[in-house]
Amino acid sequence: MKYSIYLIIFLMIAGFIYRKTWEKEIVGGGDAWGYYVYLPAMFIHDDIKTLEKSYQTRVKYKSSGWIATNELVTEAYPAGENKVIKYTMGMAILEFPFFVIAHITAGWLGYAQDGCSEPYMLIVNSGLLFYVCLGLYYLQKWLNNHYDESTAGYLLLLLGLGTNLYFFALTGMAHAILCSLYAMLLYNTDAFFRQKASRNLIGIAVSIGFIILIRPVELLCVLIPVLYYLGLENGLKNKENVFIQRLLFIKKEYKRILLAALIPIFIGSTQLFYWKYVSGKWLFYSYGGESFDFKNPHIWEGLFSFQNGWFVYTPIMASLLLGIFFYKNKLVKANYLLLGLFIPAHVYITYSWWCWQYINGLGSRPMIDIYPVAMIAVAAVWGYLYTKIKPLAWALACFFISLNLFQTYQQWQGIIWAEIGTKQFYKQTFFKTYLEYNDLVAFDLDYHQPAPEEVKNLKLLAELELKEKNIAPAQFSENLHLNPNQNELIKSKSWLKLSCKAQKNYTGADIYRMSSLVIEVKEEGKDKPIVWKGLRVDNKIACEDNFSFWGGKKDVWGWVHFYYQINADLTNKMQVKTYVWNNSPYALQLDSLRIEVVE
Image 1 (cartoon, rainbow, N blue to C red):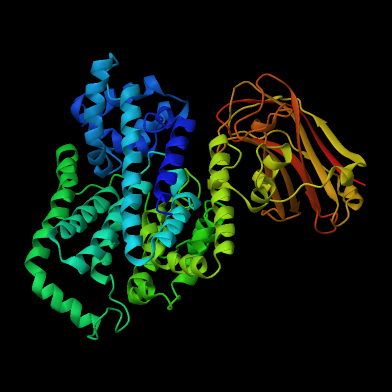
Image 2: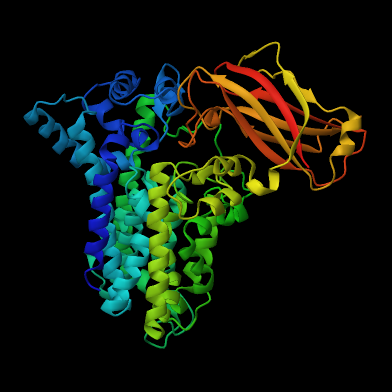
């Protein structure tokens, strides 16, 4: 199993080539571009205060509607006449050596030396993958210190291929790089307490500096060298109390420790000088209205929601909950304080962020940062299983690795969309290679649609041909409602079919801003509806067999429908109605509405 790392690296490179990562990441916009823009702005376009030419250059290579028109606003925050880059510069510093190589290469090969041409994207994205592989190397060295070679290789496979680290290694985002820095921190901390070598102390300081510079909220990482192996009494080899040992060690090594502490301070100061230069302030909050809400964390949702829930899309990491209490493992026993304080604190802070599902990706991306620390507990469970029941351990590993790689493929192909997924949608698309109409309905409504044989006998209750067929953005169509006496025809558990015939005049669709076909049930005299469900219309118009989140044919009339099951008998004081709400930025043409009941 000593070759596990080579298999992981091979599959990551294969994914890099298959996905053509260099064509999508960084130049595609978003976080990856926000990290990188420091470099072309500072060294090529000389617009680090305004960013205008840098952004205009990127858009020439990769523009797409909303990104092209709004990214300068969303990825940089105003500071007077200047623009402060939203993201800190840690990733840009790590990318700098590859940026220099790319700049020289672009000149040699006759490409534009503008920071965005193909040599830049290929080389810088390859550099990010190099850092991920370097992190795997450090993690392997740490595992080899605590497990035999075969078990260590097995555990590395689980992490590299069985978790969403694989997906994010190919995105250009910071989390896989942070995972590598944490691996470097963990390994050097372990080695320093063993060997007392200055090179390991420098490794600790450098990794802490870059972790905090890339993501300041990761300040918690300083707990790792403080609490590592500071576990139960006799957690170390000798008999002295480990707390006393640690205090004596710090007293003996305080000069070296204080000198090493200057390294992360120096690394972090680079951001302060940037903020001062651009905004005039030493400290500048560049995230605008985005913030933490520590009084209302979304911990349960962050872990278990089908909207990027950590344990839903990376189920193998749920073994962390068992591993923390796996006291048979000496490494867990010696690190119970680190696991018991660092991981809960990280989870609490992570899921106190206003956007707790963190969009953009497969599963909970901030948790990838701390995978090396989590492996202390996770490895205890899987290492024990591997040594005791090897066939079962391999069978489970194959399942979780296959699941992760397949879901990565699904996310790449647009078959799943984890950030706003639903339980029913997850069930329906499990190991599927294509989308069907009812999958998109499950994505929108989060409940199953009846089987075809259940809805053969339909009775038309009401139909409306609209007089005003053009529904402008932010407008509602006329509504089609049932007469109170028709409620008697709808019994509890009856299925209603709601339909509209629509046409759009644009290609593609923004999943967050689409027209919706709505069913509303409201009781007389009450403002709040008993039922309100909306089905996205734009991506289902005349799709035939080619369904996707962004589909729907342009300039073609088509019927869109969904079934809704009434869960109680309706009284004559309840009104059932359907209408279309145009939440898209474009006009929608609407011909008619229907309400039918399954007899």
